[in-house]
Length: 355
Ligand SMILES: NC(=O)c1ccc[n+]([C@@H]2O[C@H](COP(=O)([O-])OP(=O)(O)OC[C@H]3O[C@@H](n4cnc5c(N)ncnc54)[C@H](O)[C@@H]3O)[C@@H](O)[C@H]2O)c1
Image (cartoon, rainbow, N blue to C red; front, side, top):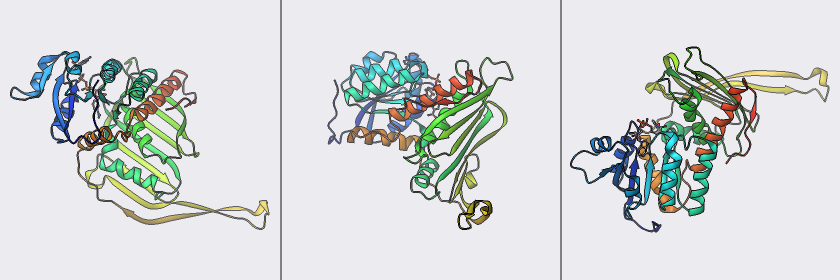
């Protein structure tokens, strides 16, 4: 079983499993990070892996995961295979003593995700879930704004992710797109605020056999509300998150590079005029704030580069990564509850048993 001394400054030996659409992005980022040395690219389709690494690379392509896991130089495995195979591949890697990075979603179900978290805990290994958006400069700033109290008390979050999307064969629009919104929500919410229930309605107007449009409403523990709108059938692409607080309102428009993030000192304030306890004469005093809008400067770093860096930091220090297995599990918990709600026509499903 591989162990890695925390003081070890040598590069962390790593293997990537899955050379499809996303795997090559991990390959590139591990190769660009001097804290890692990529040894293997594994894919059932070895031709594909060979094409990705090129003919003159020291990275070895293989179709045999066993060969990768038997290599003592490999301390960590990154899994970029379809979600239905995450449990099998990631569990084998953990059992071989490797630290593991899993693409989102962590697994195909909450129960599977929990097995991975428990196995990593038992072995003292790093388990990280690639919630890529959490490593973007915008989401990093959103988290700071909410955690520092700068936006005041959180009142609402409205997240829209709609476009003409690929209608997936095995999963509905909630499992396809909402993991992004839910992982962002999980990451930016202040530590004392958690989702407590979810209600979801969806529709399938084209007869695809699964929801192509869905609306999720989450109740948060501080009384705030979060709404997620995901849709495969919209002719226009909208990627907007609005976060309303008692002091500031933040608008993130991801398809507008000129003004990706705007912080508004605009909103509605309410004061109550209480005439010496006379309930009849108490009235609401509503006032409108119309202060400045600030567009903060944001870094340009590629999210996956920051994600890979965080994986290395977590392995070397033995501390949980920002998006650890538990974060992946919390997202799975909400997705499963949303599926239950969809099946019950939008019933409110409590989020119990969350990681
Ligand atoms: N973080 C992101 O923003 C992001 C974006 C896209 C995809 N993803 C995730 O990446 C993962 C892969 O998605 P994709 O679009 O690249 O899929 P894909 O179908 O394009 O590629 C998957 C590859 O895995 C290989 N494979 C399947 N089972 C395997 C196994 N048991 N062992 C080895 N290889 C195996 C297949 O041959 C294929 O080449 C999914 O979990 C997906 O959700 C994440």
